[in-house]
Image (cartoon, rainbow, N blue to C red; front, top):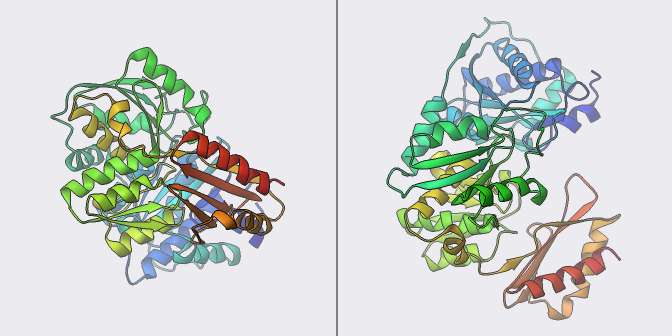
Length: 458
């Protein structure tokens, strides 16, 4: 496989490593990434790592690529702990438990032909472009220096039971009323972790697509796309479940469906979990990104907490979590971050909080969540544009006479007052503008969407 700077940077991205297996990503490439990462972790004074923990998802290429990664690490003199099949948050748990850097082989919700690596430092601390990936890319382009000392060794360790017990210690579900839970694992790693976590609890699990299959024969393992929730929505109604949960491919994100089969907004889930965490630690900080509903910071403030707003993207959330000591952070993409989970994200832990809130009282989920849905939202709407900056400026000008404020933390967020606002931001990788609108009524949201898009797509 040819190694040009362009081809390497196409795979080693801002937050992870990801590409088409056999075309962009193969065992030799992974071995070099591993060698560079091992050198980086060994020589970093804050890490001084002696071992790296490695897990992988259910994709056909994952075991071979994980083995190649282990070869690259041991060639640099570091040991490897293989945990085998794992969700991404299970790998983060292992990194925290063992206090060592980690590598998770997954391409999350990407199609079957893709694979990738999510890297972290000890304690599940993120590795991004400025914290390691840039150096790794340069090493892969120029050639990873060889290690003259003895090779490391490979051991295996099953941490699934420890992972389940740890989560159970963070959210106690043993005393809740019995619940029926429909779970769509999307043939991803939720089919591996859900039985281990839920089996000891007063839950009747109705499983859907629990067979681990990296070809995703039923639907994409991406619940952010509404079409991939349809099967779960129908299954909840069919089984009479109290709640539905849908996990993405590597099970680090979780989407919730109520007993009527209606999706629950990730912003509402963020607000619910924030309320529970603030009850345990009054006055704590809660992180939310800028397309999360305004209901979240309003509730946090009302409860005496401190809301902190960030750009969209897990690296910004995790950075703010570390800097502020925030107890919790939520994104509208259904990533949920917990200080008690090393500041890392866990879809399973978020699901357990929702189950606890539901099971500790008698209301159905639809009524329980109604109090967190103060506003109506458009969801994210993408538009292909030739010049994102020009279209953005045109939108700002079109709304100038009604605008109360404009901020540019991430794209533009235009506040129109009385709860109405919209964010328009450019994609980092595609010629797209992404629009999110929120207002008090659905009619207001629809009107604002039409008006903004008429300018964007002019």
